Image (tube, rainbow, N blue to C red; front, top):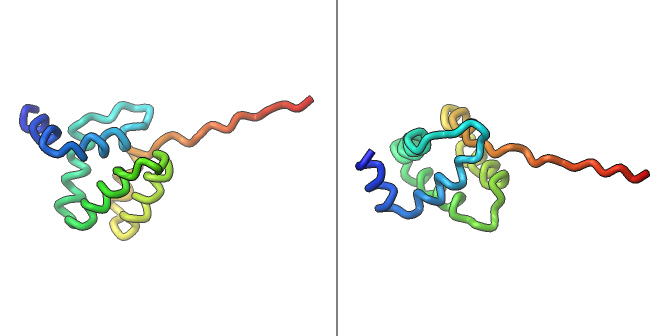
Length: 99
């Protein structure tokens, strides 16, 4: 765990990644998030940089960032499948009764 903490501090962009990706009701661990990011980096460094680019865009909602990541990983079915566990919950629509 100390090594993971060093990596987390060494690259502050990691905070953006883990903050944006950990929104599912079941709690994902730091290690799971880190493992996913490492898998992306090992696959393709440009894909890794694009991941950070998308997650660093503060104007995107979590759902929009997720959708962009799905597009980014469209040619990598295993990454798309793994990304599912980071999918943010769908927004709840409130129904108003106009009686």
